[in-house]
Image 1 (tube, rainbow, N blue to C red):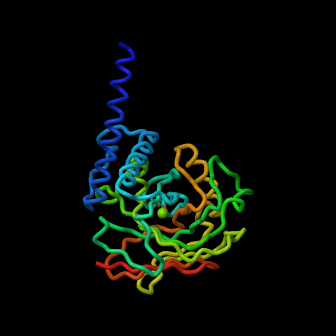
Image 2 (image 1 turned 180 degrees about the vertical axis):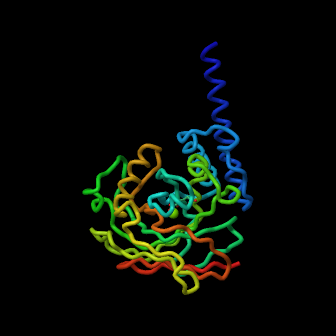
Image 3 (image 1 turned 135 degrees about the horizontal axis):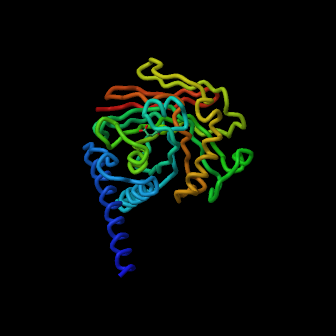
Amino acid sequence: MFVGTKIVRNLHRMSKISKIAAQLHHAQRQQQPIAQFSTQQALTLIEAYEVQHELMKLRCQEGETLIGVKMGFTSEAKMQQMGVSEMIIGQLSDAMFVSNGGSVHRSHFIHPRVEPEIAFRLKKDITQPIELHEVLDYVDGIAAALEIIDSRYENFKFSLEDVVADNCSSAAYAIGIMQEPLAVLTDLDMSLIINGNTVESGSSNDILGNPWKSLVAASALATKYKLTLKAGHIVLAGAATSAHFIKEHNEISAEVAQLETVFFRMLP
Ligand code: OOG
Ligand code: MG
């Protein structure tokens, strides 16, 4: 009797997780925003990561490959803009890749925003939390990056659990030319430039005081929530500034001192 009740409860939970994942997947594929879940039903953070895994499973079943992770809310500016105050981690796939100097179509998104970031390329697998003094052992390239986020929720409004379930609003990313890792990544000016105008500016210090700390945090969150970090994978450190809405005919670049500028164009 007891075992039966437990199985029924588990089935109920599984169907709740896969139902939410299916709705988020559909919203992304159709560019149709949906209402946030947390206002309608209780969703724990653990369940939210289960939804995220389920969602990425659906995308992989349709041919996508996971190529890394992105950190979110590693800066004060982002936490304040979105009203969320805990770090999150999401997954990047090859289908989200935009080539440096290339373009994306506005019509592929719901309400895209862009933000300036720093990308790390891993030279070996990370299978457990690492420490700050070890980061250089794990990275063989760094670059300026641009992330396009596109919440699948109406009005870009969400709770911590909602955004985690929605794979942390991940939509696309462009990465500049990879260069040898710089041991010191503090005090680098970072700016977001749209059609020649600087629309956001900050410093690499805005990312947890030191962007390398974001890799340390990524290793801890990936271990906790079972995300894979393999040699060759990319880790986005999180935006240094608030994100900015973008539209067709925008020419967008991120400048990070000492790194090569990254650029893409948004077509209709
Ligand atoms: C969530 C994603 C946050 C970052 O860099 O902080 C993020 C969102 O703002 O929609 O990518
Ligand atoms: Mg980001």
